[in-house]
Image 1 (spheres, one colour):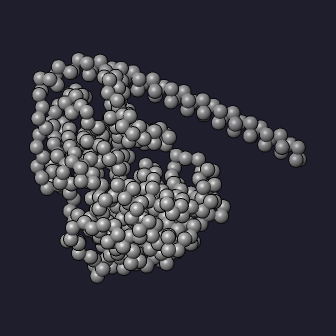
Image 2 (tube, one colour):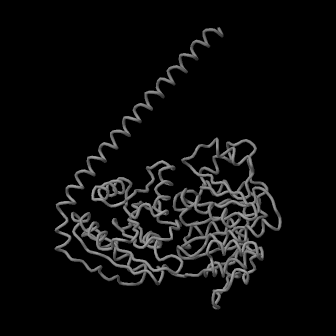
Length: 450
């Protein structure tokens, strides 16, 4: 991490978890206007991490927040920042770093909802969006910038007049994932160009060695607010597995969607291609399914997310791009169609349901190739999962219809691939013509000059 940054030991400032019952936001020291905003958002009582972190942050201390997914972390850092902004209004006041584009938009929505009555302006700076429009938004000097590290460094290096020398707050949300996605170099660059005299909040689901290193580099004498010391899933989540032959996975998926019809589902696949294929398969069988993965354009990704949030679609198929931080309140069932290769990703995936005190179900597909990975997951969460009750003969009755839908899905996938390739070929041709014209133009100019 950045060598010049001051470190701080957590040990002496570590705080014991509070034992009292959840209180009101007012009891935590949140000002009236923000308490009203919480009320309008339906936040009746603060969550555990908010009870731990908000009073400490309001005292002006740096905070390390360790909490399970779906625990209200955004409110834990947004409220202290907005309260400080009320006391000392200033532009370019806070920077929130996040690992994914979708999470950045979600955090921005919460800042704007909480700060609407006090006129707070926030800007999202992420990849996949035109840099010129982002430069114009930064020129207006918003109060809060929510960014992915790579695109922010781009603007710090290339956007004239933009700097963060007056910054008062830095938040690193999902810090473990920021570092796992190899953003260390970018985070270093950001730490070097922001003031040392600032408040820093670091939120993470897990305390990895990389996060400890970042904490030493970026925080001063922080208070640790941990509301879960070990990997765990929330109590109201009913977790199941099904052990199945790999070749019948699609049939079992269709059986479960029929059995639990009327619920909303998030189905996790391991690759972009399988996400797209399974979405097409389910559509061919009459399900309202939409995909969300990294090979889609940013507009399409947001479109899928918004349709699912608005309940216009009941099934969202996603890669792990959607496993962290996304708050979609009405997810009833999470299905691990492809088992995660990293056990910790299981925690984040199933954390998309049973959020904020609600109940939910998760079902993990285990084929003959996944036994070891599944045992690792059970070891990590410290419990043996029960098998989901199945009627095998009913599943087998679906195989013919599913096989036909698979054939259509493969054809559509091939067509989509061919369209994409022809578009890329057209782009390459246009680019080649452009380069040729530039070279020809250059040659003409040279002849004139001499």
